[in-house]
Length: 186
Image 1 (tube, rainbow, N blue to C red):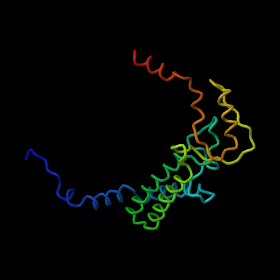
Image 2 (cartoon, rainbow, N blue to C red):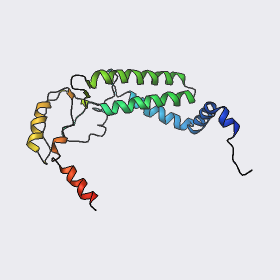
Image 3 (cartoon, rainbow, N blue to C red):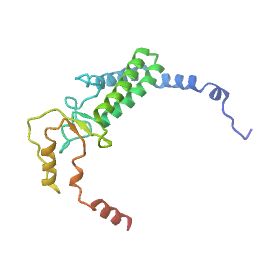
């Protein structure tokens, strides 16, 4: 009596119980909201290239500075792929095969488009974002190394693919290391 045992149905049918639990947790009201949010994100691919966009819908985590305005960011694509993969499971649990199939299609197509768009094979890393052409002259925000950042922003002003985080030149060399040693000596 002192030893607890796993309830036999939990050992015998974990997938069926998990599916029932998901259906119970995702009520109809929640499912409608989830679908609405998913469809909003889905609609942000206005040019049909399988990449979700920031331009007309808010700019994700890039709130300003030299990286703005990013049209399509790689991290947003990763989030969209993961959201689509999770939507497959949710849609299946809710019995919505059409949405599950659509989400699977989005995950696969966005992954392929992301690799094709962002991978810089000659440099061995991924680009940060795409960018729409602009007539505005970029201006570096005040701070350390402003002239260096301004020069790099001028070089990137006509680029359609942003291949680096242009904020990094603003961090003084050794600044992080000095901060870390000061913290560790406390």
